[in-house]
Image (cartoon, rainbow, N blue to C red; front, side, top):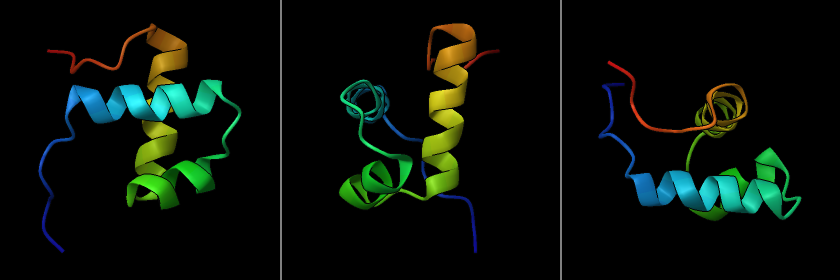
Length: 56
């Protein structure tokens, strides 16, 4: 399977908002139709760096 398109900052924000509202990674994944590994990675990056922006 090929690489998909980059997620928008808006979708990143939705993921973080759902996480802050105590939604599980599985629930967020099903809600946005995004793989759990992607959701987990975005949340982990936000916790460590405080941002979800792409780093150079």
